[in-house]
Every structure is written in C-alpha cells, then in structure tokens.
Image (tube, rainbow, N blue to C red; front, side, top):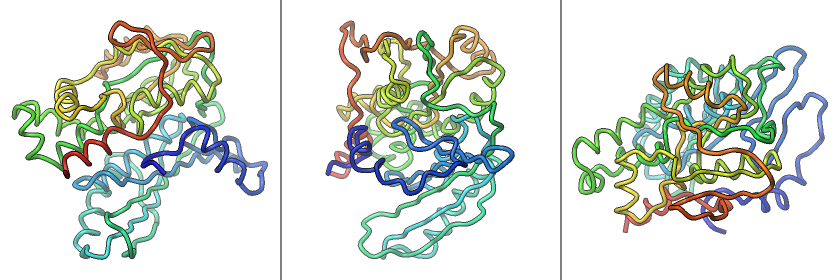
Length: 330
C-alpha cells in the first residue's frame, strides 16, 4: 500500500463497514472528512479525536498534542485532556521518552489541557518512534460543528496560509539542508511557523458568527482538506487556488525539492465554511490572524483555478512531506 492516509473510497470499503454496535449516545461518528467523534453522556457532549505523529522528530511531542487538539477545536469544542501513547524504537534510550514528554508538556500547557494517561513502551520492529494522541474535549449541543454541515453557497476561508506544519518540521529536523535553500531570515521564519500550529485562537474568535463547518489542514495539505470538506457535505466546491497564500520560505523549499505547497501538511491552517465570509475575515484580521476567502461551495463539481487554468481538485493521495523527507535522506 502507498504511504499515507487511506483514500475516501478505501475508507468506505475497508473500514466503515466494521464499526461494532451502533450506540444511542453517539452524536457524531465516522465520516469522510470528519476528524472527531462526539458522545452525548446526558450533559455536555464529549468530543474525541485521535492522531499519530510519524514524520517529525525534534518537536514530535509538541506537535502531537497540538494537532489532536486542533481536531477537537475544529468541531467547536474546548480541548480538556489528552491520552498519550509513545512507541519507541529499540535503539532509543529513556532520555528520548523524557524529551518527547517535555515537548508534549509544553504543548499541553499552551493548549491548557492535562495529560491524563497513556502508554509508553519500546516496540520491536520499529524504524522510527511513533506517538499517538487522543484528545478529549467538551461542547454544548449548540456548539458542536460537523464537517458535513457545509451549506450550498457558503464561502470558504483559509487562515494563515499553505504548508505551515511541513515547513516548520523541515526547518526543525533538517536545518543544514534548509539553510542551503533559504536565507537565514527565511530559515528563522520557517522555524517560527512551529508557533503557528495551534488553531485555538481563530477557532474561538469565530464562535459568535454563523459558522457551518470547520476543518483543520493536515495530511494531504490544503487541497486534501478542501476535498474532504466538500466530500463530507456532498457539495461541489469552486476553489481559487491562485489566491491561497503561500509563505515565502514554504514556496522556496517547495521549488527546491519539487513539492506542491498546496499538498504539504499544514496544521495551523483552518478552513471555515460560512455565509458571512467577509465579516469573519475582517474579524480575524483585526485580531492578527491572516485569513483569506479562497472559494465557494456550489453546484456538484470539485474544480479549482490554478495557474490561470481550470482543473479538477485532486483526490487526496499522501502528503508532500513524505516525499521531501525521502529526498533529503537520499
């Protein structure tokens, strides 16, 4: 199988038919383009999400916490706690576990969540460490957002830009290679993108607006997240790909490594579907969050204007970060 997430068709064929007993407490279950589950336990909803980190090293603990909390935030919930599983390769030392935990602790403090449990072990056969986080959040029934909540004619907003997480990981894990591509100023800007990974601020800022869905941009990049959001709602999307902001350091890295910046992992970027897109963008920008209207949900076609040409939005298939790491490792 190809490295990366299963395709939407593969999920529907191989995963979704096998989900155990359907429970009445389930308010939100597995969907293409949906990152969380929600349970109604006779009060606030419990919102849960789980994600692994496999392609980052230096800040893997920090990233694992923020990425999972981002999923919960995208569903309109407040992250409360996390469960953290660390699987170490056999040649690692206890100090590695300490470094991962210290990094995760910093992320948990930043997100105001508690690490309430998990599992740590050395696992035979691993060629790299694997971290998996389950984030637990809470939301009222009125606060819960679903990826399939998009309505026809909603505008689509992207915050910050494309390729944020991929740029930060490459600068943190491969400094020598990145410094050969970027100026010192550009390298420092790329490294600083690690501070952009959380979507907490923008997710909370838009709560008072009419928001129909939000989706954070992870594996598969901006194009993958746009495709997933449209698929979840069974709507078409007209995307102005040429209007998607790409930071200078991201663009330069992608040109040097022959990567597509719109398919580079970008936790920290948030997609927002709303009929009030201009006011939402203005509100975010007034609070220092870059935000751009990049498309509209309409008709049934998934199409984008890129480099002046109209073309189909591609089905997600892996992430450019995997290609970048492969090329850098030779």
